[in-house]
Length: 206
Image 1 (tube, helix red, strand yellow):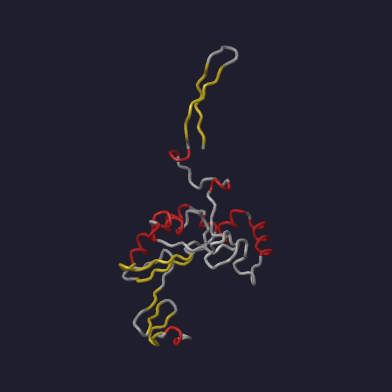
Image 2 (cartoon, one colour; image 1 turned 180 degrees about the vertical axis):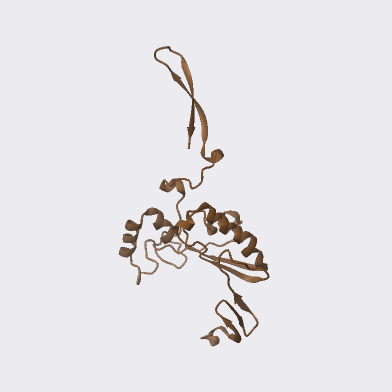
């Protein structure tokens, strides 16, 4: 609205609400909250921005399942044929919406762009050298290293490096116990010194 000369079009005066507006070329934007309804709306560009609310939300399996269900049955179904989906996320958890989309989408149909707070390689998306800060004028290396020390490794890799660690990497307990997945049964044979006989012992490991 402020700079129509840059984009080559403006916003229609009779359709300029913050949550729904149209351009002078009859395009437009419509917005809804996560888990909100999108019935009757279509999209050539579907943008999902930060669908995870906070750390507790990210570490709730029920919440992650609910968001995944909403994305697949409500948000994603609004995309027109030939349209594009853009997920913009802080990576709170390895099993968040971005993680599930990355695992379920063929590699040739998706492009992941990461901006870690401290560059990890020489093939950075914006041409940084390894170990350079993303925004040194605001968060320099000293500030980032302090954030890492005080926040812990799990928060550091998820929120700053955009590479959330798996539960096994940080020793986190499983949020929901599933017997078939988390229990393995075995048999150990143990000799008795007094009788020289073997005893079978069942072992369950989580």
